[in-house]
Amino acid sequence: MRTGDLLALRPAGLYCEAGDFYIDPIHAVPRALITHAHADHARPGHEAVLATDDTLAVMAIRYGAAFAGETQAIGYGENLRIADADVCFYPAGHVLGSAQILVQDAGSRIVVSGDFKREADPTCAPFEPIACDTFVSEATFGLPIFRHSHSRNEIAKLVASLRLFPERTHLVGAYAFGKAQRLIALLRQAGHDRPIYIHGALEKLTEYYASRGIALGNVRKVTGATDLAGEIVLCPPSSTNDLWSRKFAEPLVAFASGWMRVRARARQSGIELPLVVSDHADWDGLCATAVETGCSELLVTHGEADALVHYAQTRGIAAEPLHFTGYGDDEATPAETAA
Image 1 (cartoon, one colour):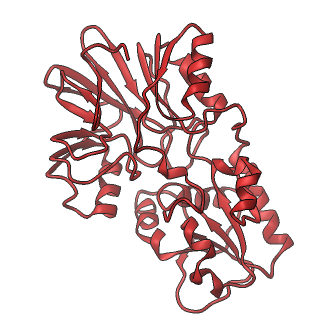
Image 2: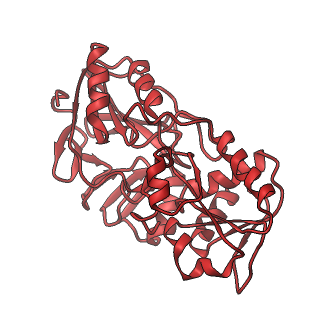
């Protein structure tokens, strides 16, 4: 890691000595800058948190209003001086409120991506490549096998399955924050105007998305005993095979994740309809982004770091993995998360 004094890797995560703050720390710290509200990046208990309005709101929904000692909201493109460092948040395209964080002083510009994706998403602001000296990237899907098809093609598979199996409930496992709401919005864009049903674990976050003006249409919480034949029901991945799922009519289990590119994972998890819909950049997106930033140094926080590091080095970019722990749980397989 050659970023000098501006950013350093400490046990709690990336630390900026000039500003005396951490970015997405994995332990409670005095001051944290948070890229987005997924649990592997946004933890409760910090004395002070700086994040976008939406990230702060989602953290409050998930952890309660007192999730931090104090909070401060920052808008996209807003510059803020913290001690001897300047910071600015830019859209990451990952989920609602997600941000890349630019940290700079007189001699260096470092962008920490958090998690990001390059495909357009009707539920959040699109990713913006930011020129920098050092780009700190994720690599959740950092292997050439992970080339995601366009999400509209995956939604078309789901809609086609509904027509083919109208007697079956289509039970779709989706991460509770971001993925579920994106799937609903994509279904609406595809012309699906029937009610979409959701597990209670998705209710508060889905209501928040709707309150932000995101068009989700008629969304109903599943209540009581009902078979919902021919309907779409979204739920946490762990719920697709528990007792709750048995109330539905011959449930056809789907799962929306970039991991569904690996068909063996789908088969092992009993997924009948794998949907390759990811909120992370795929291999091509990761490689293109590293080049587009114009960085001379690439640091990889988590995921399949080695392949991305090798690619960057072939393009003349100094690169290395950071061997981070604690990140990467928001794209887990059904057996790995209770969402």
